[in-house]
Amino acid sequence: MTTGDDTTGPARAGHLEALFSLSGRTALVTGGSSGIGLAMAEAIGRAGAAVVIVARRRPELDAAAERMRAHGVRVAAISADLGDPADVLRVCDQAAGFFGEIDILANVAANNIRRPMHELTTEDYEATMRVNVTAPYTLGRHFGPRMAARGWGRIINVGSQQSISAFGDSGVYGVSKAAITGLTRSQAEAWSRHGVRSNTLVPGFVLTPLTAPAQAIPGRAEALAARSMIGRNGVPADFAGVAVLLAGDAAEYITGQIICVDGGFSVH
Image 1 (tube, helix red, strand yellow):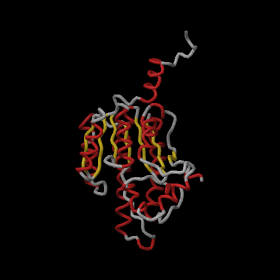
Image 2 (image 1 turned 90 degrees about the horizontal axis):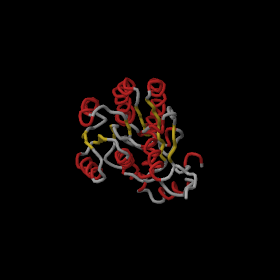
Image 3 (image 1 turned 45 degrees about the vertical axis):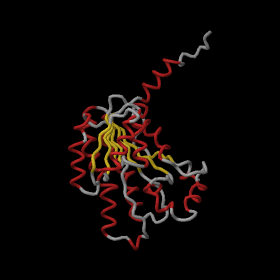
């Protein structure tokens, strides 16, 4: 007996494979040793892509790579400080040497110096902009044209609630994350017609090492959870599905956008 639904079993699996498989692709994920970056890197890898992860600390990188290999992901790691322009250029030079040309670039790494504006130093500003804006710009400027020349590519930039609104001592972090949305639009304008899609993910308050100082303030995490429509703070796993979506063919008609993955936080 049939139900008239031909999207069951192998047919359904083939349909999902066509939409979301990343087999044959290679991804570069900065900040890939922990938090949102690790969740995105692992999800992209488990969807079939080979993955190169970048972060500063070798022990955390090695642990992340082993975790991903346990799921069958082909992964390589580059230890680099994205606040150092020479290290950023080294990543540009080395990344394609592991699994081939980079098809998917996810700029997740960031620093977060959160002090009142009048307390920020010139070095605070420069250090933040080097990691949060200049490194994503440089990596995009290197890999974007190469993607365009091959006719396919995906760039995923990770912003913040500060990309769209002020949020508790936004300071220079807020400046940098607003700039990321402009970078995304510029990348989309430059390369979308050549098959490259660029989008910004905007998290809500996510429980990661980056937000540990805010989590340590009594009542802060609870108040932020209550502000979201879902009633909880984010966790890195919340970014797995959207990473696979934006990294693949299913995102063919999505470019230049700000996509909030925040439990409704930004509209509540």
